[in-house]
Image (cartoon, helix red, strand yellow):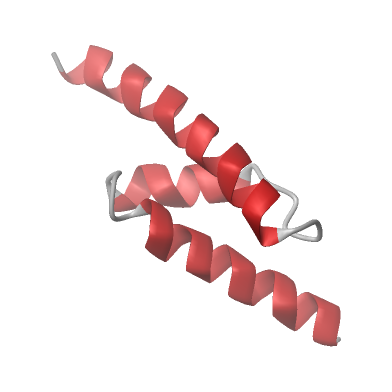
Length: 63
């Protein structure tokens, strides 16, 4: 149970961290693609990479 709680905390923290550079919906979508059982730093790097991809796609669509 504590592992699940920790994963939830990492997920929420990642959304908050990513939301400083990306829209909330992109931050959330990117955070959903990561396995938060591993280290937070590795997961955040993966989520940042995914958020950049999603943001580029979003910007192409809205232009």
